[in-house]
Length: 157
Image 1: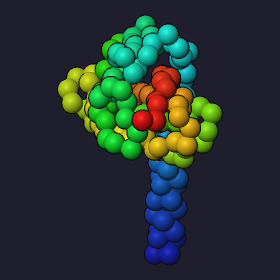
Image 2 (image 1 turned 30 degrees about the horizontal axis):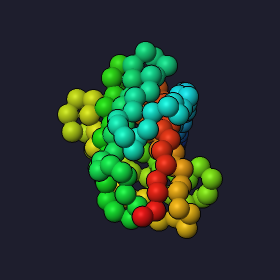
Image 3 (image 1 turned 180 degrees about the vertical axis):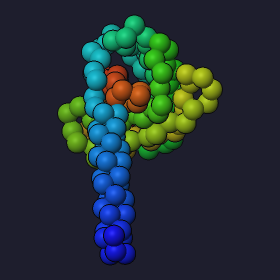
């Protein structure tokens, strides 16, 4: 074999290995970003008064706590999430108005200790005297995402 043939074989081999790796990586990312389930909202729990817990499809649970109470507008507040019965790689919370688009408001939480995550968020002020919000807790597991929605209402002072 001449040098050119050997070089072409080596380059072709590197390209094939690279394409296989890239394809595997993209499939793995798509699998991880797949929404496995969205839990039903429990409208009887009021985050303005207490922590709220939702059951997960796998038998576990997720608890959301926001303090101080009442949940303030245009002031930072603490967010805590406790997850049990599920191996979680990451947790994020997305706050959105249920009747009015208030723009993106995502908070990625940090792991404090096993199953406990925390962070800080802030809600924008609304022109209405009261505003219903949905806090979607995104639980990233190895097989995909489970979304746990929590509803609460804020009031302008």
